[in-house]
Length: 204
Image (cartoon, rainbow, N blue to C red):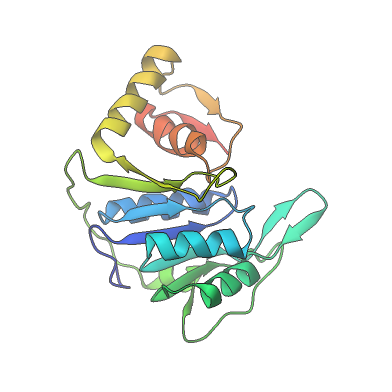
């Protein structure tokens, strides 16, 4: 909110499967803004395409991601994507994974996650209508240009609450694990929002 993010604004999230990714998603929707999570395996070209289409006011990213046998420098990829993009974000909030790899920040555009938290003030939830967008999620682009899918808030959340209780029989005492990533719709639905609707514990 301190960076001027308001209802209807887009926030792009480029992070690995870590709790901070969900924190960023929930902080965005609390303000009535729309998040667009980009799969951490994508390179600068794919990230650039999504930046230009979504036109995010702010980007939230991690310094790096960890894959089998290698560390992926997310910040380097992000810098290259922004340099290519026509749309430039006002700010980038960077979560430094100090136990893995830190990134060099751009003083004019980058803000440390820890500094943003230290100066943050509580904000009430912004009311939204059922058909207001919750998030934009892009198709993979393997067969054509990636397409942004706009997911409405009310129908999506109501459906997830129903599937968690009726199809899967989950209660608030259960522990749930989904083998997916936050960059895909299964991750959005069944790592983040579905388990939250059911009040259960979700393992990332």
